Image (cartoon, rainbow, N blue to C red; front, side, top):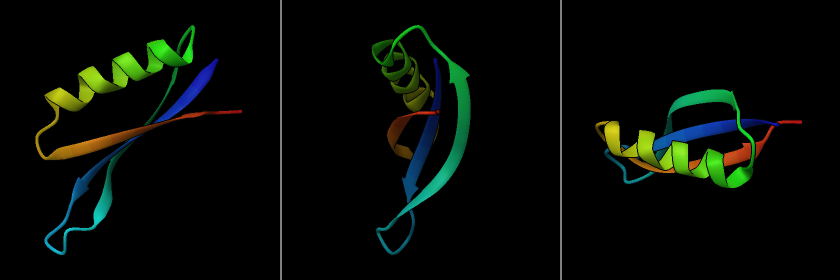
Length: 55
């Protein structure tokens, strides 16, 4: 199943803005969340991530 992963950071007005969007295939939603969380820790300035099922 393919998932769309969107990373966000906060701008100077304390609003979320997209930093990066990826589309990748994972066996499950949990696997996609774990991968996205690991990527989030590696990205400078990114503060949150959303994972969407890409249908």
